[in-house]
Image (cartoon, rainbow, N blue to C red; front, top):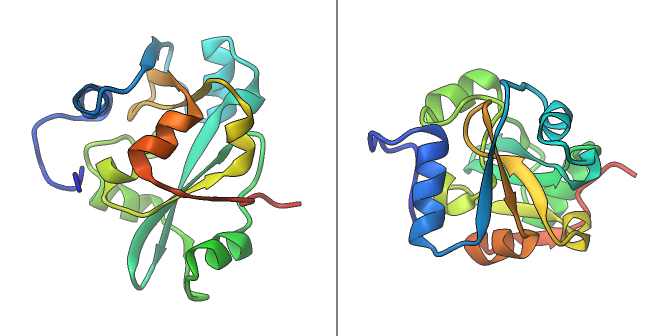
Length: 165
């Protein structure tokens, strides 16, 4: 498993592109002004917000995990715990933890690839209804357009309902 926590000299979108190229993924990179929220990223890319995915980093005693959900939704931690069969200690990772453990990527622009982050992945089933989705590219100036089925292929995530009802 690849792991962006290892210093490799490649950062942000370059690390993501390198990963996607090595795995022969079909994707497009969209460059835009700096954005700091997934819905803003969707607007900057000219895409409806419901097609934008956000990556939420989770942490417990076992380490890190990531949940990929629609940007228009909120993560339900109870559902995430149940899908992962995790303890009640599973929580959102702090910005300080993210910055320390994943220095190759901008906080708030984590790409949705478990193999790249060295963390198990959850994928909300709602994203699979779209032919293409947008997701963070590792920094605040780049967005990826990719099939959600490529996310499945690249990360082998657990798929389920992860959002607040």
